[in-house]
Length: 444
Image (cartoon, rainbow, N blue to C red; front, side, top):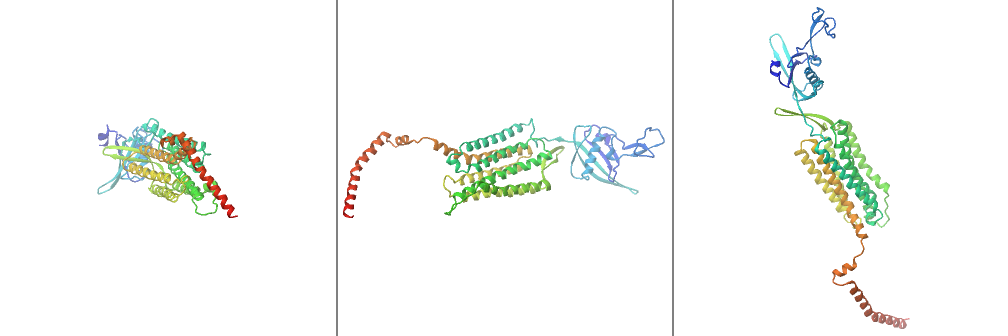
């Protein structure tokens, strides 16, 4: 029956006993499930089928190898055995001689009669389609887009850092605490650089690397921004009359707890529930698709990152509120609140779209790269460009003549008016001087 109905089909069916060693009962490949061995040693094949020293022995499913398609049955059985024969789940497998991916599913059934009870498993193995939309590799249209996005983010941040260093002697840059502002922009550049880890296949190593890089550099950038803002608030926002000092080394140490806590979280999940390459087989009607994705066993990591990184964004909003009354040249509360608001909104939109509208991880990674590019460059520009505009304004020559002309009075007329006013005021000054001398004479 199996050979007749599946002879021209790519689907392979095998029936084997439930009890170990799982002897073959029947297959659609035409294999008998029987082999000739020596009577005194069943591990040795019979050299002469006509010899009386040989006997027939049943073949376990793990040893089936009568023809080329038997390797499909054998490998599918071994994968099912390793997963303890799940009844409702598709298990992927490969063949040694056939360059095709297969998915198999088992179903238990029993046959009863008056003398015996037969407990068998039927295993159906069928070729599946390999879905490659979960990766971004060479030749994919998303490959060039992601490289361009990440590279542009790195270049933009690098240019901003160069401007800070070039103008570090200017007062608008000095009052921004340019060392820590530059470190923040460098961290944003590294955050864009970490997007290159999104390229390549979904191996265990790359899945773990992606989990580390993006989250680590995100917290590093925020921590440097926070301690920079706190330092300026401590130095110029204090209401005390005593001198307040805060060294760069002490300020840098304040960022360490944020980074250490993120490192601890990442280390815990690296050993407890890491992001790993996971096979996913989906069936839609008669179509079966195989996917290889990066995923955790539980949503715990996602929840912890939402709480911690979302909490850091709230900390930024609190700092913006506390620094709102600083002098204008030190005040960056608007920049902070806009950066935090932008990061929160973009992150929320990306999470909703990625989980509700986008199916494949390759597309999700491109969306995350675009989000990282926008939020990091927006925040960096918000802090750096206003300072550069102030520097440029200070370097521009005064425009008094231009301003006087707009008021309707030329520069020459203004000088003549000032000279006339001065000549009219001279007698008054002389009179005042004489009155002063008389008063001094009368009142020695």
